[in-house]
Amino acid sequence: MNKAIEIKNLMYAYGNQRILDNLSFGIQSGDFFIIIGPNGSGKTTLMKIISGITKLQQGEVTLLDQSLQRYTQRTLAKKIAYVPQMLPPDFPFTVAQLVLMGRAPYHGLLGLEQTKDFEIAKKAMTFTGVEQLSGRKFSQLSGGEQQRAFIARAICQEPQIILLDEPTTSLDLAHQVRIMDLMERLKIEKAITVVMVSHDVNLASMYADHLLLLKAGHIASLGRPQEVLTYKTLEEAYGCTILVDKSPIGEYQRINLVPQKNMIVDK
Image (cartoon, rainbow, N blue to C red; front, side, top):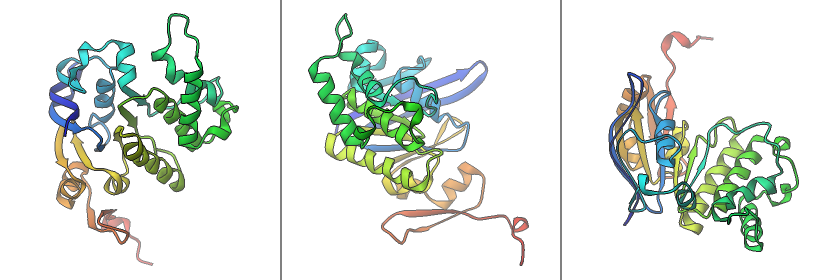
């Protein structure tokens, strides 16, 4: 299987602080690949480097068999879409206007939308379930609706790879599952490689084809969920006591935090 993304000897630092330290790994085309790890492990920095937002300092990033540095901004936007962690709360556009922005890499000099652009935008909104919200302002949407609208914009770019930085953060349980199911549909129905940063190791266990566990800019573990999500690996990465057992709903690991004895009150 071809690799959608290949990272070799990637290093990144802010001043004297090294954020990513000699990372090397690959992501197969059509994979649902989830990156996990404690705060400050370099997850968001890694995503921004892959997306081209943050400039590469040292190492090599290959996207779809071509060096990241060889892409123009327009060409890169046709191959890869990025959904950021923080969404602008006062975004002054309707959902339809937001989604149409995904067609910008395909516009000519005048930047005018064509019939095809509107058709693709409508399909993207239908796929993500926001078509009925097309006339509403982005600021009027719930958190889950905002996430789906931004994902619709990403789909509108017709990318081969979608990057998402903690898309389920601050969402309730129902919206978390809807977003994850939507990513699974993207992988299966549109053959898009999905790369996601997540803090929810249980969602990662249920949905990921492969997991990357980062700790302090290093690869702590890489592989299928059952290989990465062991109590020993997780305890070493997160520095807390963890219980890992089999989920009652399928062949998934279930991860539970174990409270410290001095935090348990005997009633």
